[in-house]
Amino acid sequence: MDSEPTARRPTLPLEDERRIIKLARRGERDAWLELVTWHQRALYRLAYALTRTPDDAAQITREALLRGWQSLQQLPEGQRVLPWLIRVVRGLAIALARRRAGTPEAQRILDEVVAASAHVNVETVGLLEAFIALETDDQIAIACRLLEDMPYGDIEAAIQTPPGSAMRRLSLARVALEGGSPQRGESVA
Image (cartoon, helix red, strand yellow):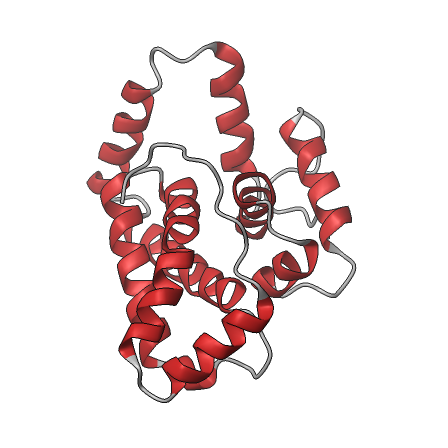
């Protein structure tokens, strides 16, 4: 897994995904590996957006995929795998951030991010700071829509928000990215 941007893959057709899930639930490892092939890059890109380090993103992605395989029977019938796995990535990223809060490791990561962005223009740094200030679910919604071109319904499933609310949430998050409000701690939903 790498952090280099690549062209988006087309979405796995729902009928095919359901067939593959059914096989994976029966314990067919190759079926699970096919799902991994389809979704690993999207999960990594989201984990990277949340952690901002390749090693953490890779570890979170591996852990999310392992947990997905171990608890595939808990995936609600008819639900797509990617939004479900995104919730796992979200939980792992939040847990990591909480463990590291106020530690030397957190400062080291921040220093690395700052050093890596030294060559980036002021607008990009401002956008990154605005993205960091968003609530985690808003970061996930933006990343899923812009990086993965995920449908609104799948975004709503990923962040567990009511049907029909993703478009409004994204709109408000974009306002915050452009320098408006809401800020961290304020709800955009």
